[in-house]
Amino acid sequence: MADEHKTPATPDEQLDKLRKKQKADRKRIREIEKRMEERGKDIERWKREDKRVEALADHGVQEPWLVITEADRAEASVGGLDENFLVVSLAVLRHETGIPQRAVFGHDHPDPGDRPPYYGHPVTHDRGRAFLRALHSDAWTYMNGIHWTQTTWYEKVFRVEKMSADLTDPQAHLRVCLGDVAVLIKDRGLHDGVMGYNGSGPAAEVYANAILNSEMPTARSWLSDR
Image 1 (spheres, rainbow, N blue to C red):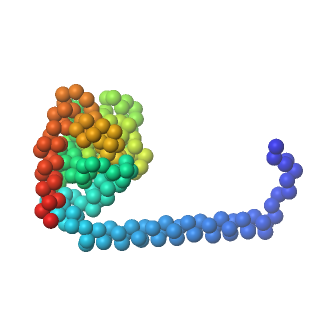
Image 2 (image 1 turned 120 degrees about the vertical axis):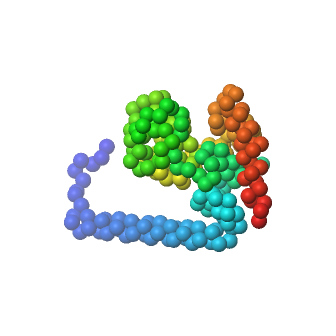
Image 3 (image 1 turned 90 degrees about the vertical axis):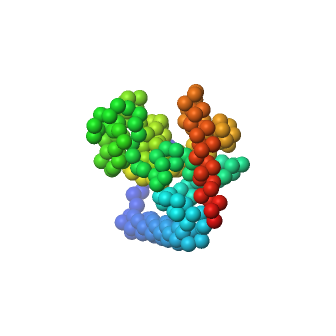
C-alpha cells in the first residue's frame, strides 16, 4: 500500500525533476532528428546509386524508391523469400491500378456519385475521411478498393488508418498490403500466397494467374533492362 503520509516534493525537487525530464526529452528529440536526417541521406543515396530506382522510373513507376523500400521491408519482415519480392510487388501494383499507379477508389459498387463508397474517384484527404467514417459505421456496405494497392478488406483499411490517418498516403497502403502478400507467400508459396491475397475461388485463381503469368514477366523485364 502506498504511504498516504508521504512528504510532498519541495518546489526545488519538483523543478529538478522537471529539468531532468526536459533533458531526457531533448535527448530523445535529437536522436529522432538524427535518424530522420540519416534516412533522408539514405533516400538520396538510393536515388543516385540504386539502378533499380532509375530503371523503374524509366518505366513510369511512381516514387520507385518508396516501392523498393517497402518491398524490401516486407520481404525482410518474413525472413526472405525464394521469389524476387520486388517483382511480385510491382506486378500487384500494375494489376491493381496500372503503372503509373493511380490513387483512386475502386469499382466494387454501383456509382453512388461523389460520396462513399465512391466509384473510381481520386483519393483525396476529404474523401478519405468521409470513406473512413462510412466504413466504421458499416464495413460490409462500404468496402471498396483504395489507392495504388486497392486496399479493400476493412481490417486492412483500418490498419492503414492506424498507421497514417490519411488514406492518401501511399506508404501506409504499401506497408500494409505488401506486408500481407509477403506473409502469405512465405506461408503458402508463390501461387497460393498471391491467390490468398485476393481471396479464394475462381476469381482469386484468375487473379493469381494474371499476376504470375502476365504482370510478373513484365515487371521482371523492367529490372533486367539495367
